Picture (cartoon, rainbow, N blue to C red):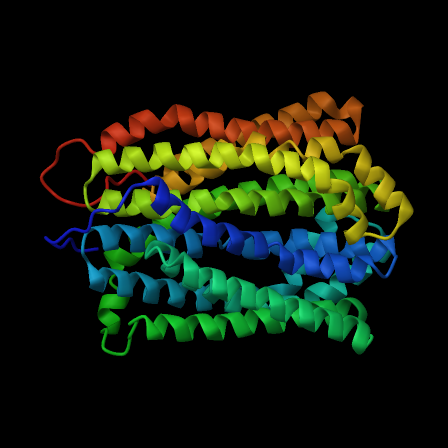
Amino acid sequence: MSAAPNVLRAEISHARVIRIALPMTLAHMTTPLLGLADAAVIGRLGEASLLGAIATGAVIFDFCFWAFGFLRMGTAGFVAQALGAGDAAGQRLTVLRALVLALVFGLALILLQKPIANISFALIDASPAVSAAARAYFDIRIWSAPVVFVNYVVLGALIGRARTDIALVVQVAINLVNIVLNVWLVYGLSLGIQGSAFGTLLAESAGALAGLTILAKLGNTFAAIPWADVLNWPAMRRMLAVNRDIMLRTAALIFSFAFFTRQGAQGGDTILAANAVLMNLFLITAHFLDGFATAAEQMCGQSLGARDESGFRRAVRLTSLWCLTFSMGASVLAFVLGGAFIDFVSTNPEVRHVARQYLYLAALTPVAGAMAFEFDGVFVGATWTRDMRNLMLLALGLYLFVFWVAQPFGNTGLWLALLTFLAARGVLQGWRYPALVAAQFQPRPALGPVNTYG
């Protein structure tokens, strides 16, 4: 991205943290509702195998879709840096390059859907009833890949410009449409789990169309941009390098959740379903805290683009304070309201009973993961993606080691390993942060971020 002389320093204050984080907190909280709506609608049919199928399908799409979350994170970081540097053309080029990648990757997943399904179901190794229902769900929802990835780019562009208010409207609209369609297709038309998949596909498609329309209204006119600039190889290579590292980091994160689900499946359909309910609770609290990570992405990225070291450091301090404070409140709410949440998601008495046994562990996940969420935002905004990737792999190794040691404790040991993994990520990133920020802002003749990603 080219640098412009009229840099735009970010406003760094408690008020601005809230202005960015609050809408995005609400938007992030609606994200797992795409899965929760599916789980709640199907769960109330009263069959543990169908709820297990939704959990299995969610894990597969976590791999298929979340692994491409770099399209959101990378876009947000680059757009925020271009905003701080006063580079309007760089913002537009970033978005258009990301949209090109979104369509390419989405079509690739559709073309590769059969081998993806075969490998995924073999690795999860659930019961025949769960696998059959999950495959029916997969065969429909995989077609949403291109529009899901377009939604990631739209969200990243809005975050990079601190327009989280608009991002909230888009996310809420997607989820309202999803809930309405799920209820209508599953109950009204009696389409069962296929109806749930169709509802989510249609909701995500509507969201992509709305998002692109909004970007056009905000001035993202791409018609006049030469394709030679869009496909400029050095710029595209840098975007691909950053996105590669984020993708590997995200794949490791999703592997940790898939491993958790697979180990739960070994305990039977009831354990699998109970863990699925509690993981939905965890994801809601995680997305709740992720609003402050989003604030860190935008404010740190813009400060870096403007070469504002004091603003960068202050952004980290303020977003960390808010993230830690809210994590404690989220843990208390998860513990107090967790029982009602379990009863809402599942009507199966055995699933409800088992889920309550592990509720206290699930309620600890917000506090354990608070600094991991926070530093993810800092590292993404600064595009310190190589370090984020490497530290994630270290934390994953510790997670697997703790699980191996805690196997005699069964499902409790599995939850303890997950909590260790979340805490280790934050500790490792906090340890690496001082050296990275010192290197980033050391005096140098040229503007632009230090190439720390590979």
